Length: 110
Image (cartoon, rainbow, N blue to C red; front, side):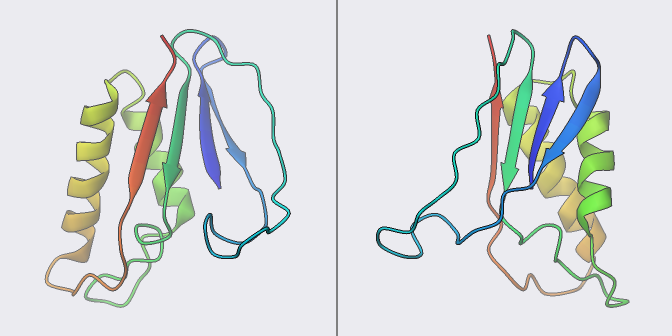
């Protein structure tokens, strides 16, 4: 999902859009999702490398933890939010090997 933080309502919305990953197939009919955003709102996009990362007990980081961690850092600037997710995932993994690529993008509306 895409995570959208609505600053004025102080709520995080999960936007689920099913389809192929971007760039996976030429001419795939991707869905379009439109949303009015306001100053202070934040959009969090990430690959499945974080939520599907296993720790040494073979437990997934998982999507609820992504949302929980996002709630904790919505007052920060984008680079600090990204750093938080990378550290949180590293802490979760412990000595486990990173199994997938990890990509995090944060957009904060000015």
